[in-house]
Image (cartoon, rainbow, N blue to C red):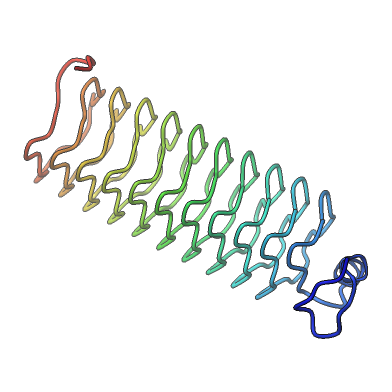
Length: 238
């Protein structure tokens, strides 16, 4: 099968070989399942729609790479540089992203279900509509991230930094947000039913019209917090 938009009309199998041998950084829509790409410099690479499921990209450089709609399920992206990478609608289900740098990355509608993001850097990342159900992002840095309408149900973000993050209409039901820093964050209309906010910092946080019923706030810091029309109280649904 040949790629019609490839200038030299190279067949896809040849393109995969050229990519794996390092002759090219680009391999859109290629089958790269289980590829061993540790420490490879793939900065700015075009890997849109590529199947990288189970691939090892440990410590690889993917800054500015285009990975929209790519399949990175179960991939090893620990310590990987993904600064400003585009991962729109990419699948990162159960991917390993320990200490990965995703600052300014675009993860709009990406699937990060069960992803391991411990100590990852996501400052100014775009996570609008992203799915982080059951994600493990303890001590991750989401400072100034855009997380509007993100799904964080059952996620564990213990100790994470969410200062100045935009979490309007985010779903945080049954999530673990213990010791999280929400200073100056916007959680307007967020749904955090039964969420655990023990020892969290809500200084100057906007929680207007949020559903916080059943939440746990033992030892939380609540100073200058906007709580207009916020639903609080027992964990019962109408």
